[in-house]
Each structure stands twice: as structure tokens, then as C-alpha cells.
Length: 217
Image (tube, rainbow, N blue to C red; front, side, top):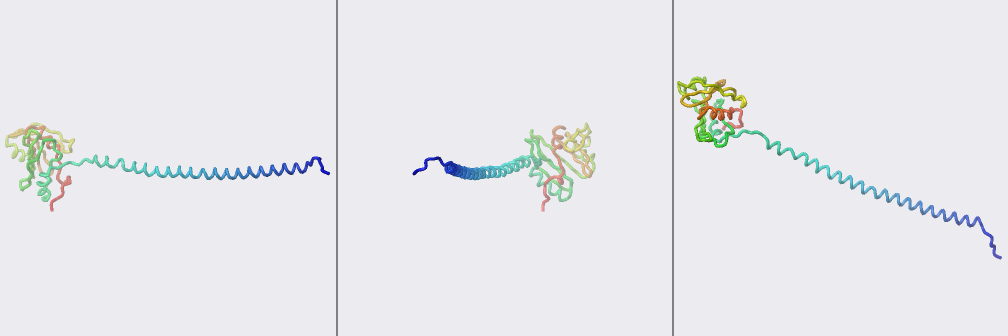
């Protein structure tokens, strides 16, 4: 004979069994989801780190090389005529403090530069073709002015070349126009068509020892 009465404990056991299976399934899904989340985060983070690492060298390389060419290009080096470079070698060998022209204005040219027992002479032409001559001798200024400009030469004023580091020169009128200055062991006179032209030439002068000209031999 079949028992048709309900069995509460059997139904409860079945319900508990189903609930347990559901919890197990949820737990399994949660574990898998957590692992997937962790696993998915790592590639993203490593990609970001790789991008950051690859960007830094490029940026630093660009910064380190950008300033150097412009700095070296702005170096201020005076230019010297080959005629002067060749002619001043004997003066350097004798330790004569020769004054040499550098970086002459456009249109000017050096025609000769010689040193001998009499001293140092540079002959040039300005942009009009008129002669410009530098004469430097050991000794006093007055005898040199008389030699170059004639015994009747008179002092007519002064020329300020302080901005070129050359001090104040005296201007003279004689057989031609010139400016002159006494130096510690020598004297120098520059003659030209006019005082301004002589001063323009004198403003380019430096001593050979202060230049980059190497001594011959």
C-alpha cells in the first residue's frame, strides 16, 4: 500500500541539496571571475609600463642634443687674412708684439704684410681702393709720426678706440692723414684717406700673440 502523506524531511533534504549545489556553482564562478580579473589587469599594467619606459629615452635624447649645435655655432672667432698669417711669422719668432688686422669690413683687402729689422708693416686697401698702411716700430711715437707723416705733421685731435680695447689714439695731419699710439715697447701709426677710415682699420687690431696663429717650425 502506497503512503501518500508528505515527507517534510525528504523535501527539505532535496531543497538543501539543490541550494548547496547552487552555492558551489556560484563559488566556482566567483573564483574564475576573480582570476580572470587579476589576469586581465596585468597585461594592461605591463603595457602601460612598457609605453612609459619606451617614451622616456626618446624625450631625454631630444633634450640633450637640441642646444649643442646652436651654442657651438655662436662661437666668436676673428678671421685673419692668409697674407697676414704668413707675414707675421718672423715677428712671432723674434717675439715682436706685432699688431694684426682681423675681420676687416667687406670690400677691404690686405696687399702685403712684412717684418724686418725696421719693424712691422701691413699694407691694405679700403672698400674704395684707397691705401691704408699700418707701420709699427720699436721706440717712441714722435719719431715714427715724423717718419711716416713728415716732419711737419701736427696733432689734430684724439680717437677713442676703448670699445675695441685699444685705448685712445692721437690723430695727425701731415703728408697724409693718420692716427698713432705709443705702446709699452713699440709705437704704431695707421695712415688712410681720412681719420675715420684709419680708425676703422685700427679698431680691428689685436696682438699676434693673442691670436691663434701658430709659430712656424
